[in-house]
Image 1 (cartoon, rainbow, N blue to C red):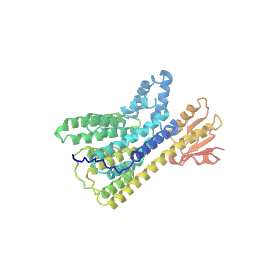
Image 2: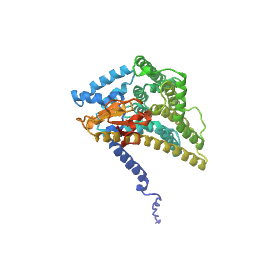
Image 3: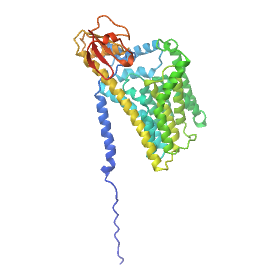
Amino acid sequence: MSQTELVLPSPVVGSHPWRRRWPRLAWLVASVAVLIGVAALPWEWSFIDDTGMIGVLHAQQDVHGSVGGVLPAMRDWYGMDVSWGLFRPSWWVYAGTFYLLPAGAAHAVRLLMLALAAAGPLVLVARTAKGRATLIWTGAALAANVSVYRGLWYVSLQELSGLCFVGLGLLARRHPAVRIACFLVAAWFKSPFAWLLVGYGALLLFRRATRWWGALCLALGAGTVIAAADFARSGSYTAGFVLSTSRIVDNAQTAVFQLAPVAVVLVVGAVALRVRPRWPADPTGPALLLGGLGYLANLLPWQTGVHYASPYVYLIGAGAVVMLAPYARPAYRWLTVTGLALAVLVGLLAMTAGGRYVYRNAATTTGLRDCLLNLPDGSVVGYNRPEAWNRLNAILHYHRPDTRTQVALVPNGTTVAGLGYYVWEPDYGPGTPALRGGPAVCRTPLATVYQIR
C-alpha cells in the first residue's frame, strides 16, 4: 500500500484586503466631504445671474406654483435670448430644472459636472494606454485648465454644463448615437461646441463604416452654427460684436496665456513618457483637437479670457493627450518621475489658483450680503460693478423681503444723489474717489464698503 502524500497550499504572501481598499475608502470619504462642503454653499455665492434667470423663475413660480412656473419661465428665457441674439436651447431646459433643486444639491451637481467632464478623457486614456503614469499625465493636463474652475462659481453660465456633456459623450465609446447626442447638447449650451461636431463628423466621413454617422454629425454641427449665426444677426447683446484686427490680436495673446499651463504639462509629460507621435486609429482625439481649435477661432473676434476660455483649453488639452497617450513608453524611471512631478505641480498650482478665485468671489458675495443687511434699513448703497448691483438687490430681498435698503449702479467717475454708502470693487474700474473719503464699514476679499460723509 503506497503512502499518500498530503499536499497543503502554501500561504499567499500579500497585504490584507483592508490595506488594498483603504485608498479607495479615503477617496470616497474625501469626495463625500467635498460634496457636503459644496452643498453648504448658499445661492448667493455669485453675483452672476445670466439674464436674471432666478428672478424670472421666482416671478413665474409666484403666479403658477413651484413646478407650474417652470414652463412659463422657459418661455421668458427663450424670448430674452431671441432679443439678445443667443442660441442655447439646452440652457433653457437646464435653467428651468436646475433651480428647482435645493441650493446645496444644485451646487453639488455643478461639482459632479466637473468630475464627469474630467472622467471622459481619463477613461479613454485608461482604455488605450498602459500604466498609471499616463493617467497621471492626463489628470495633470485636465487639472491645469485654470479657467474651468470658474464654472463652479458662475452657476448660471453654460461652459461647464457643455463640458459635462462632452465628457459624457466621450464615455459613450461604443454608442455613436449617444456620443453625437451628448455633443449636440453641449453645442446647444454654447454654440461654439458645434465645431466639435463638425470636426468629429468630418473625420468619421473618411471611414466607410462610419460615413452615415459622420454625415449626421457634420449636418448637426453645421446646422447649429447656422442657427447661432441667424440668432446673432439681430440680437442686442451680439450687436456689440465688432470685427477688428487689434481685438483678434489681443484675444490671441490672451488665449496663449490661458493655454500655457496645459501646454507645459503636455510637453513635459510627452518628454517624460517618451511619446512618439503618430496618427491615431481612433478619431476621437483629433476630433477634440479640431473642435478646440474651431472653438478658439470662433472666440477670437469676441472674448477668449476668463470663463470663456475653459472649453477650448479643455478640448485642445484633452485632444492632445488622448492622441498621444497610446504611444507613451516610459523607459527611464528618473525621467518619468521628474517629468510627472513637474506636470502634477503645474496642475496643483492651477487648481489652487482656481480654488482661490472661487473662494474670493464667494466670500465677497456673502460678505457684502451680510454687511448691507446690517446697515440701517432704508440705506441707499452705490456700487461700481455692473450687473452685481442688481443681483445684490435681489439677494437682500430674498433674505429680508421687507427691507428698504437699495443698491444703485454708480458708474466709475460719477455719483448718485442720496447715497449713504458706496461699494468699490477695484477689478471693475477706479470707481469714484470722492465717494471713498469716509470710513470703511466692511471689507471683503474683492470689495470694500465705505460710509459717505
